[in-house]
Image (tube, rainbow, N blue to C red; front, top):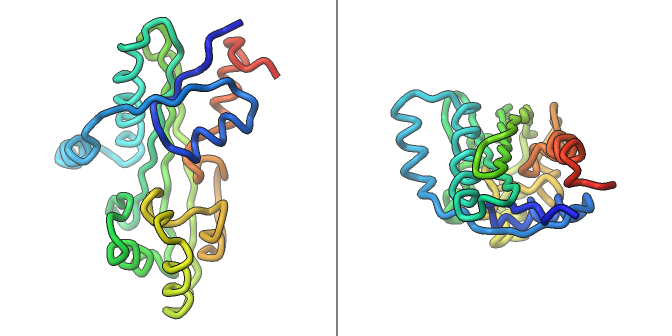
Length: 199
């Protein structure tokens, strides 16, 4: 029986997705300085898609070197709108500003996954989704911000599509699971091939 997969993250959404899919899983925090790394990648004009991949790779590698006998999954998301990269909001004011910027607009979300085995990268995939927000009212936004509470600060862009955040959108083109934080179907396909996912 294979050892449980290690997710190089404490993301509750990613952990829940993988566990709901029937995987035996351990979640280990990848301690990387994302802000500094993002700033460096932006300074090198790295495209958002490649930035998501690089961050996912760094997370997986950081945990994999400590567990060379285990399979480790790293993941990261990058939201880009008109060339600007959005991070997880750090305050109510930042969340409101981000959502006002995205209101009535389309943006792209890249969701990268990288798997290491024996401390070496063996697989990677980048999911892509295009999301279009509706032109919601200021009253709706204020109500949304109140109801979301601290959940605003757990996701890039300040929305959770699987809950109240769905009310923000007109359309989503692309992989639903990638919006939630992980290109799940592709990850499961690889793991089945490796015998890690037995279902």
